[in-house]
Image (cartoon, rainbow, N blue to C red; front, side, top):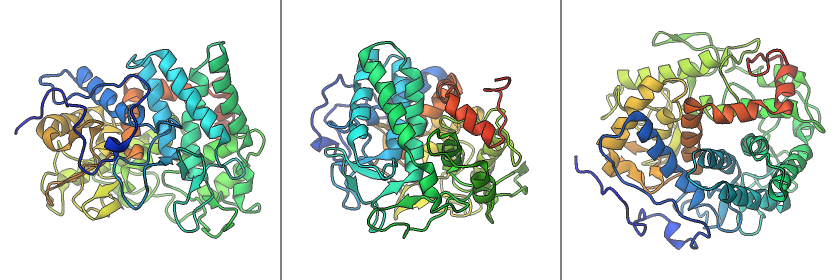
Length: 450
């Protein structure tokens, strides 16, 4: 298969990208590279993490520094839309970039300070940020007609990253002092208890000053929202009780499972586990190793979820082209019809690279096989200036040109957690998080004996 050039010209941008419209970055660019032959596994991981980080570094919004929702103009978004959850993932990626010296520490500090100062002045609703902000003004951009207020889950993803940053930027100097101060102030302002909708047994996803609780979406498990309950229990000024977790999150028709799929027992969730982001988004900071509560061992849950997803792709009951031992991973992403949450029970023939690559901590022996296939065999179709594009379907001869923040960020972070455990160590070192987990009756070796 024809391979792309070793070095991309910086002027080459996907045809539907609005990166070409963005202003020139004020910081040093990380130059993109093409396919480099005969890389060791470690060197290949370096290349993938570093190039993926470019999405958040060179393509970050020039005013706010936050992560743009996606690389292409779609759904009438416009150029100023930044995403709150994706920015949390990008903040964790920034820590990785500093740790691995792709940028200088001072560059990391300056970008981090730009982001927290912007967020400190941006719209929030009882301390909770909206799904989207205008990266120029800090004003809310509605995610839907009634979704124009606080988004508790997206805010949880943001603070998963911000709390890691607070634990990482520890120097006793004015800039890092301000980073920590801003993060702690915003953290303490989140009114988790407000989002119980007047004291009900659930956390609720949305509240709007214009539409109140009209979205009416209680957060119940098992899905990608575990981190929201953990952080809500960890809050110091406006926390929720443990009863909210045990009577709300847990009490749903799709929480407990216990059945076996392809020889792997699935403790929680939908049959076959659902899209793989369920095992990834909440666990960018939350360390699943040895993490247990009265309902599950979360390392077993996430590992078996991943193994089931892979086994389904190898089995390939719908006979989609390309599926196999070296090409697997179903999760939410763009597709040839628009966007969908791909899973074994919602299989449209679309493979999303972030699914297998963000599973590195759970299935490194299988994830590296997928990575080598994506990079060396499909690289001329799916490898670009910000790493791997969002998704592809060989059955439909469709290969995305787009990149999405929420899909690119976990690739950097979860590969790093596999390699060094960096983000897990930072997040789990937060005293508030340790308190919240203990409050919910979790066990973890990260705070055993504390």
